[in-house]
Image 1 (cartoon, rainbow, N blue to C red):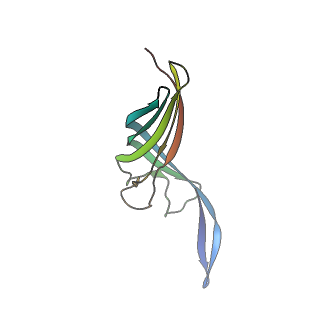
Image 2: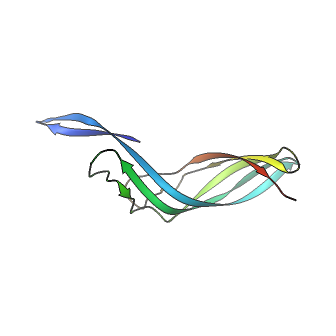
Length: 128
């Protein structure tokens, strides 16, 4: 994320430059889902994704007190968000799936209103 920096010069506000801010949330994600097979090879799924925040850090390229680098102290320990997806069986053992995770809940307890939404695709092998 790029943030514009402003400063007061006399009685004017002028842009003093930009600052690049990177947020990193290390998480363990546990999806719980239910599937419904419309046909033998195609299924729709839905459920909830439980994301446990292990480590949350922010890094910027400037020395600016409003966005200090280091550990994010107000990160939630657990984020729970719904998802929907689809799965297609290519062969008896090989399948592809895709899902979208809706970021309805905030990642932080207070401060910046940040949410995490994402789309993921996968290729899997089922052992029988």
